[in-house]
Image (cartoon, rainbow, N blue to C red; front, side, top):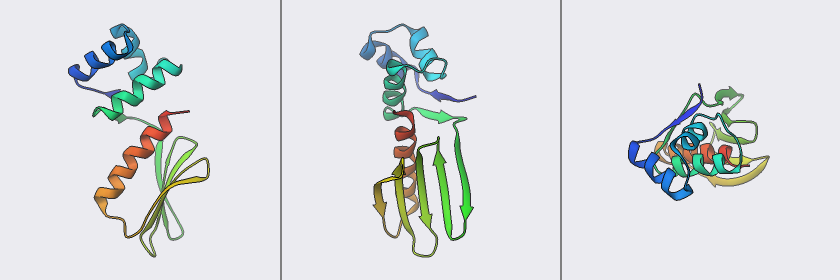
Amino acid sequence: MRRIIVSQETREKLRTVFDVSDKTVSFALNYRSDNELAQKIRMLALQNGGKSTGGDMETFFAENYLVQRFGADVEIRVDLTNDATTLSKRGKVIKELKNTKIEELMRLQQKAQLLSQVL
């Protein structure tokens, strides 16, 4: 089941920032609602340390590439021959890295996750 896990403190912050009920926050974090407000709640939750689980991220190898897709539109592609990494959304390159370190890849994955949550 896809959802975003947040601390109680973050949950309270979301309620306050958006002036909504706990039920509204819960529905947004559990993907039971998918309107503009729910998307904003999820984005802020992830930006404040929320962890996404059960999402539709897939990882696979294609020729000399490691590819991670986040939903239908966002992709990280690592060229295994030269360690070049690209983050793209709908085919448009958002960020390029050379000699990618694990920490950089992890930050890129977080950014990809956020991008996949936004229209």
